[in-house]
Image (cartoon, rainbow, N blue to C red; front, top):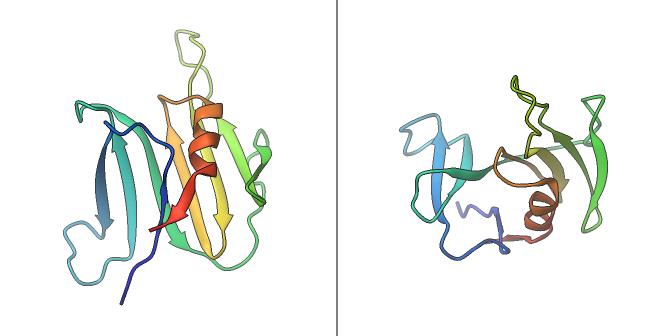
Length: 125
């Protein structure tokens, strides 16, 4: 079976990619996976993407989610809430369905605009 998945094209070339498969350490029956994009020193998670096959419509599930258009696909963004020391949070969760693939991106490092730009650059490998 050939596995096709979406990957972002608009990311810095010095970031590294770490692919996590689930169930953990499974070689034959992988049910799910996440792409972890790390900084150039491979120390900090810049963002993660989870993908899975989906059937049906994507709906708003959190009251504060903002509806977005990602290249003609309906998506939702929810920002992280402020921290205990009242700093302004960066990042959040961006989710959408592209064709028959559900994609969820999360980051505590990137801004909403950066996450949206990355999402708009997603293409099949």
